[in-house]
Image (cartoon, rainbow, N blue to C red):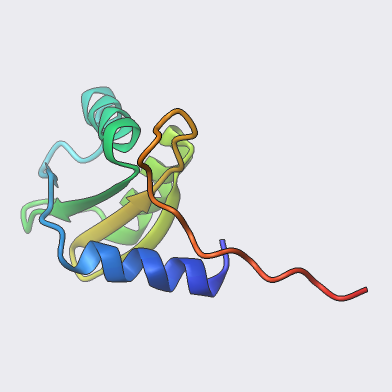
Length: 103
């Protein structure tokens, strides 16, 4: 993912509300399934890590991204933004094109 694409996704995520919360139980199989389903439906999701969660939000983001084959767009404070392209979705998020390298 290019920096331009990441910046575009960040701008979309700014206006979004968190759709999932992570608490004391940290990353459970149920949470992973919920994140996977949310990414399937929306492509771009925002997750809030509650104060009672002892784990580092950056580590949680990396773990969830690995398990759901998503990309971490950003982690700011206790907010995580994940993105996964869904090729089956007709009205999905259209990322800016990456520039071709000159030969």
